[in-house]
Length: 547
Image (cartoon, rainbow, N blue to C red; front, side, top):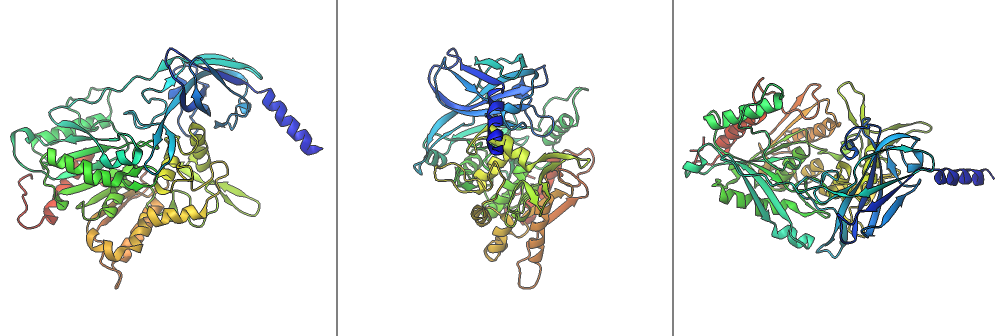
């Protein structure tokens, strides 16, 4: 009887819940469409709610549902059982005055070479940002009074406009090329882009130059290089970008090419720069197609000793992975605050021994696993809250978010071709078979340990890691794990010694980049570091006229 009463109470609460009715405007869409429909409910009555979704305590509320073959002019409804984040369902939304807006993250159909047919959101030059992606549809924001059983009507009447491509300048050139390897994998044209900073005498010289490949999240252009002085209202970042421009053009720095690559996938704002089951052969596409094309076009030396790779966070992991997976292609890697390089410490998860990604469980008590911390040690986010938000933004790994990027990169495809998830989005339960796959393919420390006899001679002096001991996302423990193994190669019978460096900044957060002299821009400092390393490792007789 008690179970029956509880079930009746649950049904009653759903029937009394507020709802949303969203119409697909025929003025913005002429054919049926697939996608993820997201309604944002904001307590802030100013601005657009779609731009107020973040993660952590400051985020506004979202609700999401898949739509398939949605016809122009038709309406769909969100009821009380519609999943949401942070509130778990629409039935949990309390009465009140809200600013409300709907967004449709539009999917396209991909017919991959492996036979799978997938509905995914391709990047349109924004770096997989559902609330800013060109071509996505949205409603005007409206202020509404939400009550029990009330239904709010919205219409998708607006289209996010295209992004103008960046224009070439004297120092920054832009390259866009179709990848044969990725086009074959995805069954439709796939393009890679790069933003190339050339040295001061590039147009008047025949000199060949070394290259520093900068790995980062999707950027859309070469950031951190500003040709005009900032005004008094702008901060240190802009001042540093202008100082780097002055250093670069004045002769105070060695001459080289700096290349920023963009390679967003349908799953994230970058591919992690490696070959994966879900995104395809991005590692090969970069090292066999894009990088050689850039080196040919911009008069690069084109030898391993004249290539450096560097980057932070996601770019830090990519930096180390590209150096490790292509050990003879690059002459040195500088990874700053890399994403987890040892899955024994996958942020706050031990992928191999933990049973749950969300909680540490005792006989009666359980504690949440944290995803990030603020400088005062307050919680930035939990693994559960972060993953739950992504599950609302997109089912089947289609959120475009960080955890889904990990699943898509480190894991295999499931039976339907979508990323197989290491942990269940609802419960956090970890699949130990998938953990084995992660270890065998993308745990960088495990990869080094397993194959050091082959890799060691090819990586000597090339791996350089910088990390704060109080990394915002708990990435320092994994870096310590990698350091412990690499330092062990100094022991008798374990060699060759790796001969690289680890620098840990005491109490420094994400993203610590080392002890740089006060007032020196990051790029200015490391261009000199790369140049010195290249001069030291260049074979006898190499052209060093670029100094």
